[in-house]
Length: 279
Ligand SMILES: [Fe+2]
Ligand SMILES: [Fe+2]
Image 1 (cartoon, helix red, strand yellow):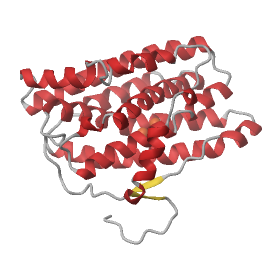
Image 2 (image 1 turned 135 degrees about the horizontal axis):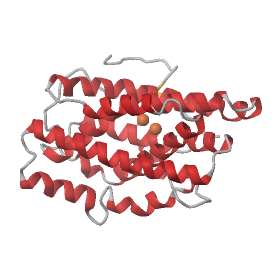
Image 3 (image 1 turned 60 degrees about the vertical axis):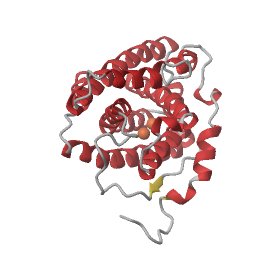
Image 4 (image 1 turned 30 degrees about the vertical axis):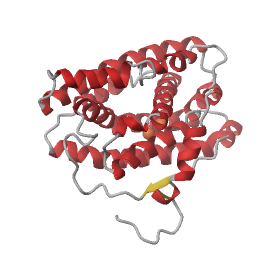
């Protein structure tokens, strides 16, 4: 079992930020905005799925995994809240959140499915967020020129995604979910993720007026498709999920642990005394 700490982030998210908050780079701002727009709905789905999975496990398994699930829910609930504040600024700037609308419909359309499918979809997405999170911690230049408070927001989220990478996967194993369905759902989730994030990034760039600028796509290609880019560079880690003996713990989380150690002044564990908070 992984001990998961729920952390309250001590950053100011009441002050608005620039449209191209990510280093005045149109693509990087639009892409990360698309991810942020997907989080509140997605993370509520992960919480609901893992909670429903735990509920149908035998008492001994609930005992074994319950505490970690509680930490997972606390972390994702905090991410939802913080990204909700971030997304509020995007809404004020006039961005349209289509990714959330599509997710709401997809979740409703699939509500009838077996709990194992929902936990598999959660484990699949958590694998993708964990490998992207590790990539972010390895490549903080993806946020170069951003305000410190926004760097902290994205890297704190990355560190916690890396930290809780195993929770949904372990629930899926405890539920006796098959390898075949794990991989099938992973392929589906990958397709949906790529499609939805691409559509939302395009929408954001359209609103920003930079969709047809050459520099926009040069930046996008550099960040995602360079040899060590977020997508291309992560292909081996993405593919690793297909192996029958895969487990998220096989992948290293040292960067996450180091970031949390180095930035412990940026958050307080929930339950600890807060001396002075900007909120
Ligand atoms: Fe999250
Ligand atoms: Fe997560």
